[in-house]
Image (cartoon, rainbow over all chains, first blue to last red; front, side, top):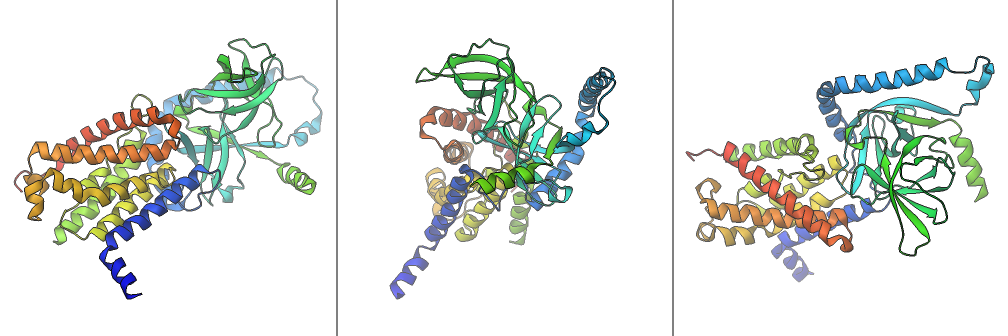
Amino acid sequence: MQQLFNYFIKNKTFVLFSLLFTIAITLTVKSHEFHRTKLFNSSNYVVGCVYELSNSISQYFHLAEENKLLLEENSKLKSKLFNQPKYSPVDSILEEPYNLNPAVVYNNSYSLTDNYITLNKGLRDGFKEDYGVITSKGIVGIIDKISSKYCRVLSILNSNSNINVKLKKTNHFGTLSWDSKSAGIVQLNDIQDLVKLTVGDTIITSGFSSIFPANIPVGTINSYRLNDTKDLYIIDVKLFNDMTSLKHVYIIKNTDLNELENLNQSDE
Amino acid sequence: MNNIVFVNIMRFFGLLLLQVLICSNINLMGYINPNIYLLFILLYPASNNRLLFIFCSFLIGVIIDAFLDSGGTHAAASVLIAYIRPLFLKFSFRAAYDYQSIKFSNTNFAQRYIYFLSLILIHHFVLFSLIVFDQNKMLLIIKQTFYSSGFTFLLCLLIYSLFSRKEA
């Protein structure tokens, strides 16, 4: 025992080094697994506060651009409103299970292999994990960590991201993932080789999951090729969203989510 | 003595904020970001308590990981170079290190460049290996290591020459 202690005291630098190095590696490995890191992520209170401060300064530089986007969206919504059929049922709004809530992006990364986005909404605003996040142009990601004031979004530019989407023209569906090469291009897998594709076809969300409603625009086909086994397509999808300049986003709250979850759980 | 402690604490927080608020958002050519917080580890006084030094390096790495959502990659790379630093000090500033009297402002350019560059390269290689975490993407790791190291090295030299006091 004495010798053991002596050994530790003699090599205390090495012991401390190996201890801290192991901790760091463990954190790394855990972060590569899905949904694990608890302590050190950007929905943390202190980190969120610093990003909030930095955002309160930097947002002024983007005001003109944001105004333009809002105007575009407003005009689109107005035109939709004017073209609406005159007699719609009075209670049609009650059937809508999805609520859209605005949020501000505090931090956005897009150059790593696993990218996350920090937003200014949290548990106290009534949001939960697994809520979808979109912009007026297309999808952004899914909330994966949440604290009382902030939340972290698993961006579609993340190797762990899998979102169910379909081709607008033919309704064939597949999974959207990212090969971590370019911030504007994501990959759509699992489309059978017998489907006829054309460059420029629109991709939209399928609505199979409870996270995103159907028909949210995602992007257009940029190019496509067959995979190694020659039976499925790998499609490069050019996103409608510019993921490098997100400022204002919407969080989708699905009011039926609890009911759906209960339904699925009772099944298992 | 107190002055040294104060300077290092200021450097710790100054570089940390500079890193997470500015340097990690540069994204030159899409993905190149300098890691200037390494300057804290590079310039930490050489003849000091090593345990404290290794722990401080871990701390700055973990805080940066929290901001960038990168797990423990920065922490691991920082702890590693903090641990192997004496080796490179000895290699780069042979005579001065033997007398335990290194003052970075007194060393000559070539020695300092070699010391900076070697530690920065090792740090970035470990960092990107852990971030990519896929041995089939070795080319990507090496490419990113190369570009980011160059950028970090340039910025570190710039910042160092801006803030170093010549009369010391």
